[in-house]
Picture 1 (cartoon, rainbow, N blue to C red):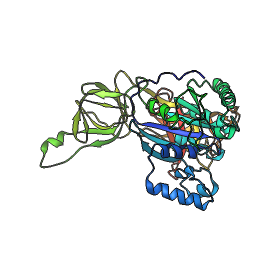
Picture 2: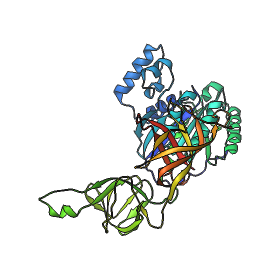
Picture 3: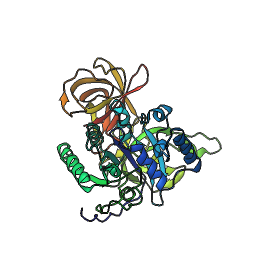
Picture 4: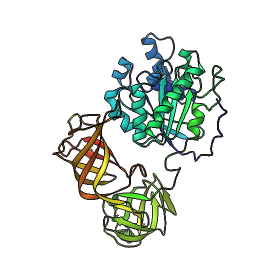
Length: 426
C-alpha cells in the first residue's frame, strides 16, 4: 500500500462515531480495546469485567463486556441495545455508539447512526463482506454519516495476510460504488490483540496507513466541513417577573439550541411562521452577554422588536430561509410493533414544532437485504420506505442531505404517545 496521506489540520471538537457490522465481527471488543489502550477505563470497572471473564471460563479479560451492559447481552454474548460510551484523549472528546448487529435490531442501529459523524463498519477477515455489512453500510449512507471507515478485524485469525485485506477492500469498494458512497477508508486490525488500534503492533508492516486513533483524532467534527444556514427552533419564551428589578419586566428571551449555523448581535432575522423580521439585540448564555452563538450552543436570543413568538416557532437569518412544507417526501424507518396504517393520523415532531400528519402514499419499501424497491401498503417494524406525508400545518425544513438536524423528524402515536417512526425529508 502507498504511504499515508498527510493528516489534515482539524478543529478538534466533539466527535460522535458509530461501530456497526455483522454479528460477532468484534464491535464491542473494538470499543473495549480502544478504551483500554487509551487508559480511560476506571479501575473498578476493569475489576468487574475481569471477574465476569473468569466466571465465563476465559483466561483473558473479555473487553466486549465494557459495552454489553444488559444481562441478556452478556448471557448471549451479543449486543441488543445501543450502548453509548464516553471517553476523552488529550486532543478531543468522543461519544461512541455501539450498534447491534442483528437484523431484528435495525431500528436501534438507525437511532444510533442519526447523530454520528463517522461510522466504523467492522468486517471479520475470515468471512469478508456479509449481508449485514452491506445493510449497515447502506443505513449509514442513508442517514447521512459523512465518513465511513471499514475496519477489517480479526486479522490475527488469517495470519495478518495482506491479500485477504486487499480482497475485502475491493469487494466493499464495488458495493460502495453502487450506492454512490464517496468517502471510504480502510484499516486492517486485531481488536483482540490491539494491532492498529492505538499502537501499530509488529505484525502488519505491509500496512503503512494510519492507526484507528490517528483517524479518529483527525476526523472533522459535525458542522465544521461546510457553511450551514442558521436554524434556531424556539423551545421556551423567558419572561421573568421580579418586583425588586423592574427592568426585568422588559426582558423577553427566546431560549433554545442553535441547531446549525451561527448568529451575531445585529444580524437580521425572520421568525417563522409569522414571517416578521427583526434584528438580534442580545445573545446570552446563562445570563452572560455574548457577541455571537454557534451550532449546538444553548442560548437565549433577544430581539429589537416585540414579536409574538412561542415554542415551535423558528428564528432564521432573513437571507437563509428554509422551505415551508405542507406535504413532505421522506424516507421513514418504522420503529413500532404496531404496523403503520395510512388510515391513521400521527403527530409529526420536527425540531420543537408538532403538527398532525397522515400518510398520503407509500412509494415503495426498501428490502434491506437486497436493497430492492418493493411495493407496500403498510409498514412493519424495522421497515424502511419512501413515502409522502400530508401535514395539517406547515413545517419549516431543509432537505436532510443539506441539514441533518432540520431535515429529520419523528412520528408519534397520539394514543400511546410512543415514538413510532423516524424520518428524513428528501
